Length: 143
Image 1 (cartoon, rainbow, N blue to C red):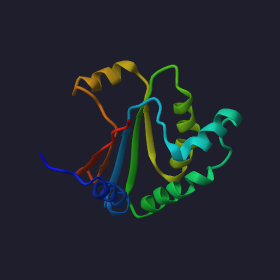
Image 2: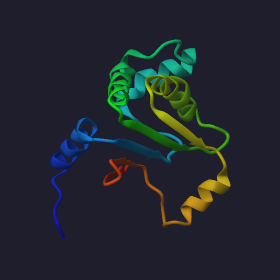
Image 3: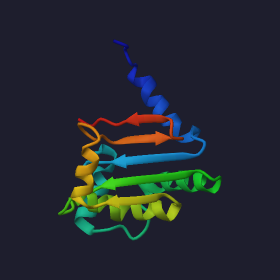
Image 4: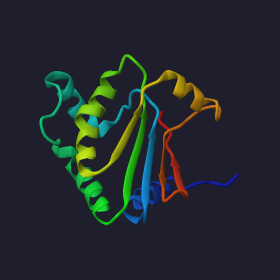
């Protein structure tokens, strides 16, 4: 069995965002993500509702998207959702996607349980991933 150096994988993943030539595609399957960097932002969302402007913590991401779009690259995302929407999914849509879409990201939300079921038939489990230039894929595993 080949040993994978996690530090090298994390660096390759981070580098992929700056090195892709044509496209970055993200599939998001979970209904909630426990992301330490978003904890304060999420708490603020629960207390005060949707952000009126792009949250400071999200500005660099949106600038990166806009820069990529300006040179002809694409950012695309598909988000699988179930109903009722979780608070986290609402947070992603209202405090994230709306601003990344303004920056140029194409976001599609698949809201039909039958479509998710059809996708599940393709394999045992659908996992989150990033796909760069249709040939470099990073499967994301959350614990």
